[in-house]
Image 1 (cartoon, rainbow, N blue to C red):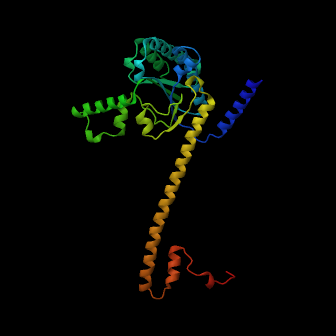
Image 2: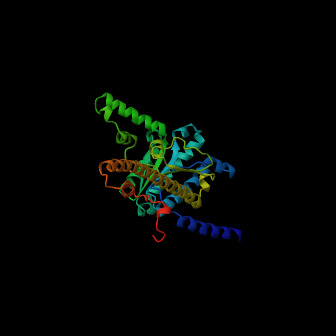
Image 3: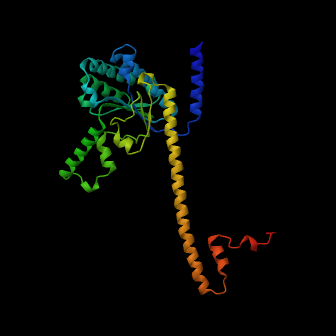
Length: 315
């Protein structure tokens, strides 16, 4: 009896969260942490945790598409992950290969217009994973309503370093002018295709760090960050909607701050102009003796120079 009751409460709470959404991020990036810890707590091995996490990933794609998110980047495999033991890496590579191929062939993927792209040093991956990546990118190449970036063999600082080296090499060869290097120059060399600035980073598993994930697109855009304690296989739609609300609250705070700064600027300009108007009024008084100084000042500044005692009570 308790489980159905809890299910009803959660569905009602989800409806409440959806109604409260005012701002939807365009690009969400997720650090899917906690698969191995989840498996250990369940008495399973690491590969089983990764498989459970893959199920959560599929659900997340639906949540994003339903909400109107246009781009999703998943931190699936970092450069540091290569240091894990072979008995964990081999099942993980097999899972990546299987899921990429399954996803590329899924009807719902094509119905939602999902375009799959891999970012990172894909050449470091085993042949079978690289072939699955190429297959998924090829099968979804014509889809253009939702972009799924899968970060594989990815390291944010490495990507920036590689881009800097490419630019330096081209500048040394006289192919580009170093003085002309701008944001677009760097972005063109980070990835084969453009990636939107990240609006929201989500990290599961309890750690409060972004782990070198998309530093150019996230830090440069001052992305909102949502940390939560559930392991990735346990991440729910309620958790996702809380992350969305975190982004919305940050956007609302920014809007208020921008409005307050604009108002302060207007007041500062108005004060300068008012002081200048008073100086003009003073000069006119000396040059136009027939003009009453108080009336002139009032006309220019909008202030009422009469005292309450001097006013007619009927006014």
